[in-house]
Amino acid sequence: MKHVLTRRKNYLQIVSGMFSPAVFVAFVCWQLPSLTSDILMYVVPVFLLSTFVSLKSGLKPAAWITNDELYIRDGIFRIESIPLEKVEAMSYKVGVKDDRERGVDIHLLMVKMKGFSEWHIPIRDRIDHGKELRLFKFIRDNFFPLSLITPTADELSD
Image (cartoon, rainbow, N blue to C red; front, side):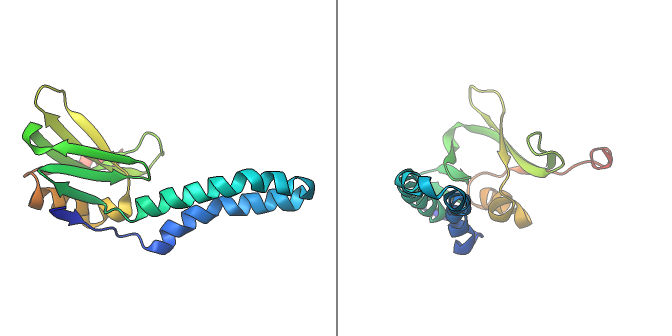
């Protein structure tokens, strides 16, 4: 990896995601002791798989550039890749309201690639990407000279 945007989340946050289902399973086993062996037979393999996936994802950086291709990690499974030779224009918009989570501000990476319409990539990870415009600065300094779009006074009053 040529350039790397390191993670801001600590390992305690990553590991806590693995153990959150354990509380539910413990509650069910406590309520239905006769099903404990059956539940554990299915839960243990699922728990081991989720542990593997969480640790594998948790050890990856927030974003990185390899061979003129930008990779942005979003969540556990999703990684967006943008090849530099196809990029025509790129901008980064802050203060966008997320339709999925009412009232939450997200950032939006808007990419115009050759032969395609504009691609809007929602940046929801406020800790690894949004705080102090980390992803914007990383892309601007290492990948493409993108512009920053801030909300207007009218958009802020909505």
